[in-house]
Length: 110
Length: 116
Image 1: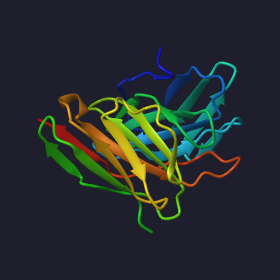
Image 2: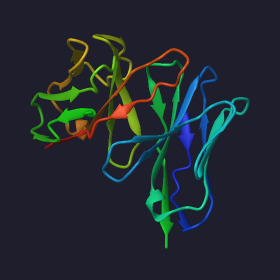
Image 3: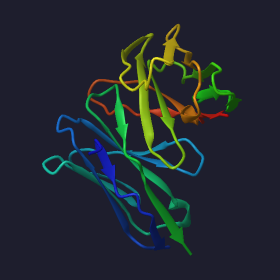
């Protein structure tokens, strides 16, 4: 079993749709959680950190469920520019090895 | 300010040759990470530096892989006797960890290594 698991998708949604991704992690000692976005043949870029209380940034909402060991990302009112691969990232300590999921691919269509 | 830079951007080499990949982190970032990403796959952790020391080398796939960091800045990843399975994009990231805050990593554009 992988340390961090994501549904690879692809998720194909129309513009304006709401889409949610889940990610599960196996190490209960994990302390830091992130969502990164990676465009085709580009480097990953931080989308948002995930806090225990949940957090929102515009159309994006991230949630953490420690008891069930999963994090989620909700994208509302999808835009064409949201098309990318979304990577779930988990770290045990504040700095050090981070484990990346294999990513979930989202395609938003007109 | 400048982001993380990596060189070369592309490297084609023959099986059995040694290669050196370079990473220039963001100025002032104390932590530096190397990952590799094969086509269509996620990122595979290789090594983590805090300053010049590498507290976690657990991801290096074999003893053909080594990395060093000097002056708390530039890092080089060396692959000896390259094999075709080493072909991948090698990504470097840097960060400035602070107690109590999530450690945000900033990635360079990567070096695409092709071993023929």
